[in-house]
Image 1 (cartoon, rainbow, N blue to C red):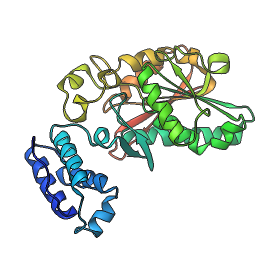
Image 2 (cartoon, helix red, strand yellow):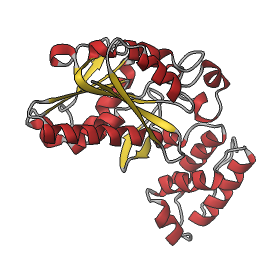
Image 3 (cartoon, helix red, strand yellow):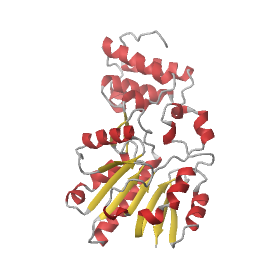
Image 4 (tube, one colour):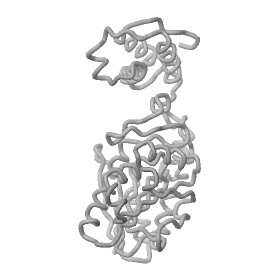
Length: 302
């Protein structure tokens, strides 16, 4: 596709041509990706494209579409090409500053929202919540949108931190785009280093840390070749950062508090073992994702 331009054509033909080119390039979901790119060029969703296959794209937009198709054929993720990811019914701005939000992480956000809702009903004190490794800010954004009033009334204090200052810039942009500027405190630091909560301890700690192995990241298949490696690499066994975080939970989470951690396939037992080594009583449970994988670990400090 390099060096070519797409002629003025209908939506249906553009989808077919781009899907064919993406299939030839080995892209795993050529038809879906073609529809997303063509829809982006028209400024319409896939349902509109299906209803208007004869719609014609102007020449300037077709040139942009040709470039996007070439980038996708080279493996660049759709989310980086379009500049956003549809996640939990939200439009999250995405670029190479942070990991692209995954569908699995919607479970983490939903679990955090349930924990906060239960505490707001049960407790009179403010609920102090800390999201570690916020990346695009997607999880903090979902929480802040759900509890905007509680934050404004001081019933919920929400902090989101990340080691990457660039990722925090992106998170700030996403929060501002959804009218949440100033409702979430952003802090830069390594894991539990920032002390942005009063008293320094959270009632709820939420984290989606890098949990792929270094070998998986080095292989760089699919979107992994384009996303920031430090947002993916969890060391030789994928547990390096989870291990560090769990060791420090007693100092970071208040008595009676809860930590919610997203984990990878097959890591649940290893995480349970790490929690068992903590010098305090805990109750550990897991939440499965739609594929049945134990995806979120809930650690309650008894």
